[in-house]
Amino acid sequence: MSIDRHLVDTNVFVYALFPATPQHAASRALVETAKDPDAGLCVFPQKMLAEFFSIVTNPKRVTLAKSAEEALQAIEQFLALPGLTLLSLPPDVVTGWIALVRAKPVSAVKCSMFGP
Image: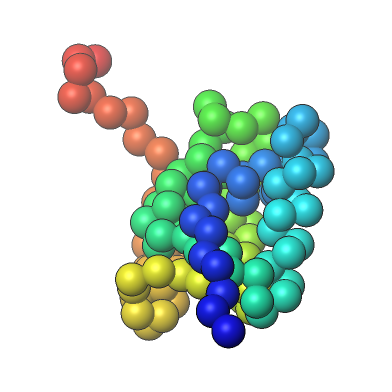
């Protein structure tokens, strides 16, 4: 039996983390389906790691920004869901990235590409 695969956008995980958003209930429900090993949900690593982390820790993007540690814990919880597959990146890269961010905290910086 083959499992249908479904790519999940970063916003689903962001909305699932913030109960005050109008999309929370639907997003949380979708994420909850990943408790089933046959859910077939997939995510690209850069979306789950860099984009999700960047959004949820940035007070300009969300009303109640998460700390770096809270964001990392959320990523770990999402990735622990048996029905969610992380695509195209060895697991040790993911755990290495989490360890790196914990060791060398990062924060949003102003992009000066378009001027001051």
